[in-house]
Length: 158
Image 1 (tube, rainbow, N blue to C red):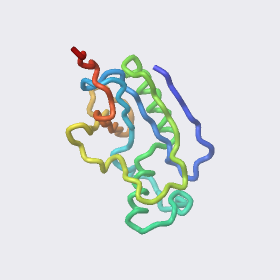
Image 2: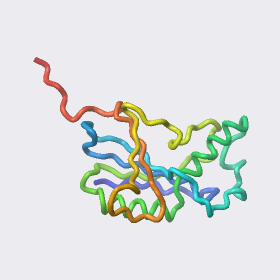
Image 3: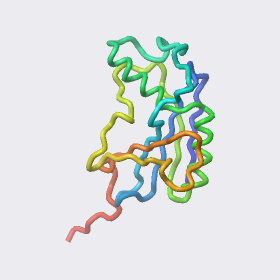
Image 4: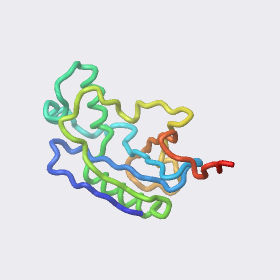
């Protein structure tokens, strides 16, 4: 497994770090990208004092609120470090890559949070905290879209 880390410059708030894994083989597809996120906010976190005008470009209140959720579902530096260690140790042999990055602040209004995307035929969610032996102190989900990935076996043309 390759670990690709893009360390951001100083971020304007505690959150804003992102993670993505690529699973070698998953549900009949190969190299499936899974975007990791927090499925719920941290109740103990005081985001009221964050510089929201530096985090999200101006826009209508509904679009700004939606983008605010994108930031709240991203990770802190400490959470990201815990995720990298856990995923690498637990799933490393099943992955081709683990990538970390940061949100490009300020974000445009209207970005849809991953937790709001409904599951369906091709779009699904991995709920890591439901897997036996999960040891992180916070829940992590992963969103994938199987339609974006090739099947494991391509039918032969005869």
